[in-house]
Length: 265
Image (cartoon, rainbow, N blue to C red; front, side):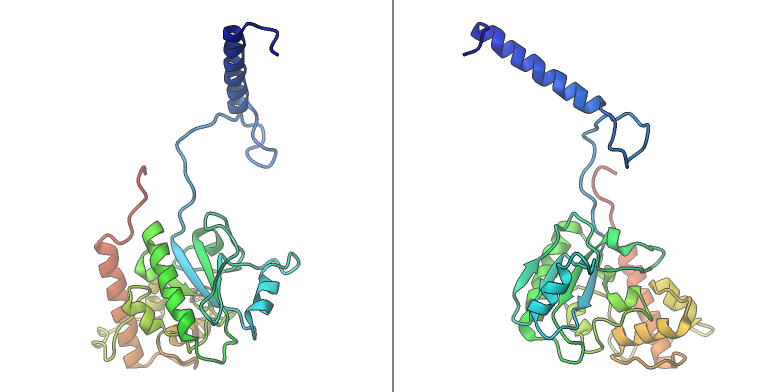
């Protein structure tokens, strides 16, 4: 029983709670965040908003092997979601957390895709078509993510797009055209109108987002995604036309306001 009369006890509890709140607001930040700074809490914040979705393939024979890799502390690799061949959806990391799926990467000036994206692993060896149930589940998940985060259509990418030369997934068998028909990722139907005279393919690849430091790997990544091929050669006229068409599509979507800042900014 409290040693104080009930009204006094209630008042004391309220005062204690208020003091704890003040102390918490004024306490120093953790040692690894802003050394020497005073901590004054602000309510004006929310979770980071991912702006990209990166698609991967596990290169495993089965989902159990993939899960073992993606949850092994020694491997230091993960993704937010894993989709099995039968369409089973497994979440491994909270969407607001930074999963370790992209690694060293670059796209359109963004050099830390892990901090700006959601990673989705598809259980696939890399030498087989992607299962129908798996793609159906992927399309449903992409729809949910688009609704939650307003991710632009052009920002649905392959691991191979953001790390050309280092990664080649998902394979050339991935159905990018089908995804684009549902509004996920860019696409142009052939034949595309010819590129204008003097069109610079390397500058075009860079404008689309590719790291062109190694031109050959950038061309291979582009072909894998949009042509289902991985040869390394200068882009042919029809491929330049495709690239120019993709750039026009990306620009028109940007101008229509697909990329909009979150409220409060």
